[in-house]
View (tube, rainbow, N blue to C red):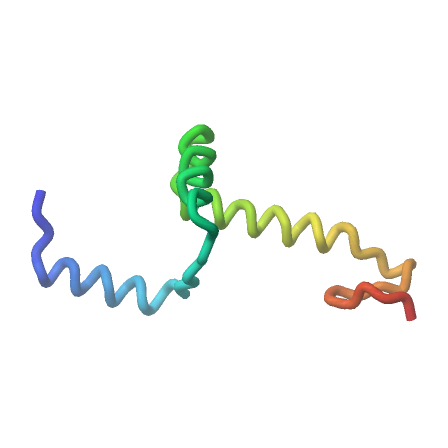
Length: 78
């Protein structure tokens, strides 16, 4: 079904108001590998990348232990 210009304009306005865009550059061939991985897990590429980012950030934050004298973004002991 074709999308009208008015409907597309409304979608674009909503997207601009509610989402940030990030351009991602990967080496040749990696896009197809990422797409295949996402599809194998019944995800879109965008959904997979968002999940990967979220899980990595959670894992990184769990590793940081205040008793070690480390803070987020600071890998050195004080």
